Length: 163
Image (cartoon, rainbow, N blue to C red; front, side, top):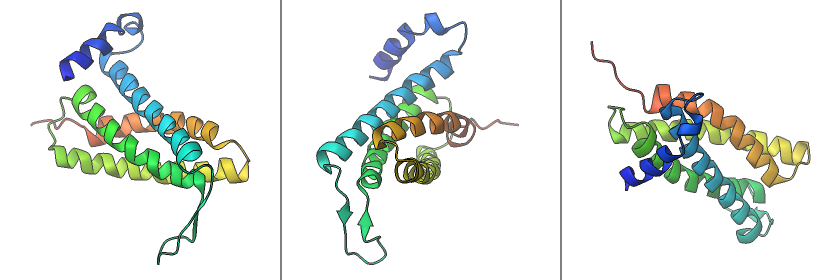
C-alpha cells in the first residue's frame, strides 16, 4: 500500500522538482490530503451532523454550551489526527528513528497546540469578525499547516544524529 501511494505521489513530482525537494512535495501532498479531509469533515459535521446548531450540555467541568463551529472543529480534528499521523509516519517522515509511540505523542502535542490556536482563531473570525465558519476554517488550516511542517520535521519525526 505504501509503495503504491508513493508511486502515485511521485508520479506528479517532476513538474515541481525544480522548486521543491521530493520530501517537501510529499509533505505538501500529505498535508493537503489531511487538510482537505479535515475541511470536508468540518463542513459535513457543521452542516449535516450538527445542522449548524449549538450543543447544550449539562456535565460538570464542561461548558454549558458548545457552539456548532467548535463542535465541528473537535470532530474534524479527531479525523484529521488519524489521517495526518498515518500519512506523515508512513509516507513522509519515514527515516525517523524515534519509536512510533513517541512520534504519536509528539504528533498529538503539536496537534493540541494547533487545536488551541485553531479554536482561538476560529472563535475570533466567526464570533468577532462574523466570517462564515467553513471559509474561516480553510484559512486557518493553511496558516497552521505552514507552522506544522517545521514542527513535524524538527520535533515529531526528527532523525536522531548518532555521534
